[in-house]
Image (cartoon, rainbow, N blue to C red; front, side, top):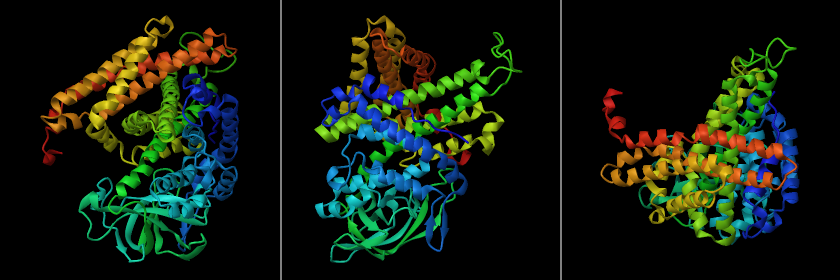
Length: 591
């Protein structure tokens, strides 16, 4: 059975050596001293490694079941959920006035990686609740916040987001779910929603659904969509649970992965709902939840790659297969371990350099969210908005590929269920699809985010890279990092220039290159992270650290990424500059 060990040491390196969080002027960061964050991460690591990780395979094999209208979660999930709630983990970065601990989002993000890496399907129950609570926090009235948030923060009540319908996914303007006003401030919600993660289960007393629906007589399309709070059980003004609302489970979806999460078809039959935010402004409120969710999904790509990598390394060191071509390494055995072979090393280095670079990228993004929310930094808000589709799209694509590489290390044993490696691949696959399929993320990046605020934020990113390279150009120890980063950044800028020069004449020239651009941008971001990690590592070595091996390994891993992975930007640029002609050449009938 696969195992999971929380990467506390690497998280501490990023938080304190690279990001220097305790020295930041972001409110609350002064409390994030290394000793404190280590204590939190170690405790989270114990819970995820000892309690949640063993249930990962249980959830995969058992799945959820629907019996007489009741959804039952896999064996052990309910008890584990109680332990998570008792530890206060569900409200780690939520406001104290609603029962949270008000820790910065960056610490919640690090802990979140552990939870997701140990058991993604389980963690989605609390993760979706966090997103729903964030939407109510941002757009709810004081009465709504006081009524719903305390029990959602504690996960006594969990939450969901209801967007998709059988006939519409990305194009939400086509939705048919209706909300009829009742004249007393309530609405009757009727319609069907599908693919609702954590849609129903037996681990909470109530479930608070956030449902997109159209009020009759409103604007056509997406401009006529509103957002509603629709609980599974009605709640009176004193917060007491009452009668069952008009929402029921039609089915549990049979899925490729995340079997331990109850992905439901939900039927709304004149269910009582309450408007969240303004009429016909539902997408604005929902995007509060979706942007947070997209960052969380990017983290899922990282976390599944990390878990799969850990197991692949252990197998590669243990499994005997063939002899090292440069000389026997295990003379007392019939063969050498897999890890001696160059192609196995290449695969493991791909995985290791991705997960460590991605972790730094995610945590850097989290600091920008904290800067935006805690100190009103509009530049940070703009930059993380630009990078959100990159975090979601690139990290989930690459994360999935890394789980495949980890599975490949096992050969045939990775394909059978005995070793459990297929679960990482199957669970990682959904992250490329939900919260906006990755093709949509790429379109959002190129079609909207690049030009946002007059291109201010992408120019700020280029300036960030330029200044880092300039400031460290004389450091010989960083030469292997600075030169590749400069080249990759120039490729990215050239792609952006191509879009400007050719996209106006034919928008397909930009849109056909959007996916390549998203990956190109992702590689440059990880290149920047590796350059910053290399600077931190060389500083520690120069200072005479007692853990030289850790920092030397960090530099070696980073050099691999810069030499073997970052040059992919040149390939993506060539594809982009080929334009749309070959992409759009065939008539639809020719396919």
